[in-house]
Amino acid sequence: MGLFDGQVALVTGGGHGQGRAHALGFAREGADIVICDIAAQIDEIPYPLATGDDLDETVRLVEKEGRRCVAVVADMRRTTDVAGVVSEALEAFGRIDVLVANHGVINYATVEQTTDEMWDSVVDTNLTGVFKIFRAVIPSMKAAGYGRIVATSSMGARQPHPNLAHYVAAKCGVIGLVKSCAQEVADFGITVNAVCPGAVGTNLFLNEATYRLFCPDIEDPTPEDFEQRLIDLHRGLNGHRYLQPEHVTRAVMYFAGDRDGIMTGQITELGLGDMARIY
Image (cartoon, rainbow, N blue to C red; front, side):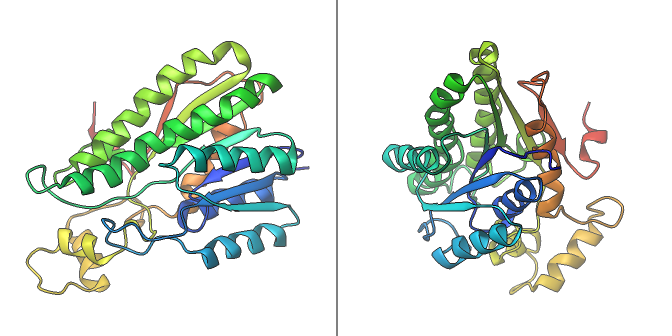
């Protein structure tokens, strides 16, 4: 018997990375899955985003676990796309028990160097897109008298870094959104929480732009140069220099598995020890 038998989980950004891990985690615990992803490149994002083939692969992996999976190509910045995802989920399964608002992007620049386009691509995706999917799922959850919403914020919202002001601002905004929304829906059987992962071993983190940021003294840093720099900087905990997607999945499922609805408006950090140095 699985923890989410009979439930339906909607995972945004489900084409690869953390989203795929979350979809598989819920499927292994008995849930049917709806995933969505932009499945296209955004000009201002300096690493490969998910593709249609990636979405298809997530579907295949979920179905291999014996669960149904519906995939939708959608841009969370667009209200009509967001509404379409929720509509397809309800048409396919008649319910949405869990929302994992996981989608997100990043690029690097100082405030002075951040263009309007860079700012908008990050903030519209990472904050406005989370708001839009929250707004879209709440009516059906209210009608059902049950819902578990989990958003992905970031350790950047707890321990900001330079060159990430737009990203940090968006992720701080997600925390504020979660806490306000949690109070609004508290009497309807819905909980709203957030996880704050540190760096995770996905395309968002393991890419040339990141390598250059960490290794500015090396003309063309390699992945090996980057890994050595993390060692030199004493990054990580218990041999893990950065998280894996499955580490985040466990925290997401912890909140989503709260059947009694006793946790809401809460933030859980996955900081590989960084929180021990923050009062």
